[in-house]
Length: 199
Image (tube, rainbow, N blue to C red; front, side, top):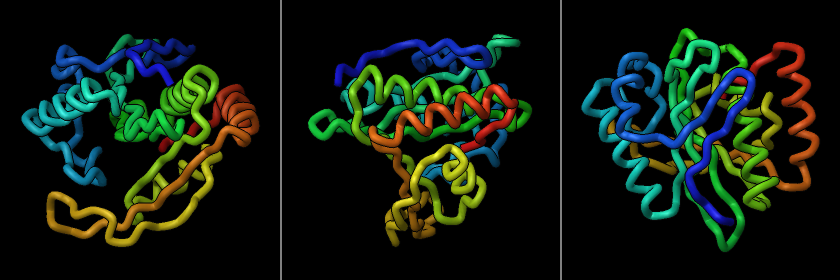
């Protein structure tokens, strides 16, 4: 798995390597409620700067590859997403840390972003497993991951302590290499019919 910065171009979205230069545009579309389910919520400019710095630090360490999400129609930065917890030896990684500003939610942007990232993971990087996890209370994300075609594997109880002190149970989902073709076909069909996935 050769992990290096890459740009993805689709019809609706461009994913480009996250940089400090994206801080201003991201801050312009940040809603304090958007990242409420993150273990360390991002509600203001200082927390957003920490979020970006942490992502870049993990990229330097070789365990993450963060992206800025850009709406191709307008050219605006509308959110962020990431490959994380990259495990080269076991050919697996996670897709997560995803958020899309409210005006662009329930559009084709995130569905196509997931399609592009999954294709890169399985077809270029040679991953055999892509993981997703979400807060057990985040019913919207859980439903969207199921629509994506990911398999719910179970709940890790008392998995994390959030910034507020609340103990989070995390729900794990995955797609494995033998399932990828079917997932790809469903995502392509959803995009063709104008259906979206919001996870």
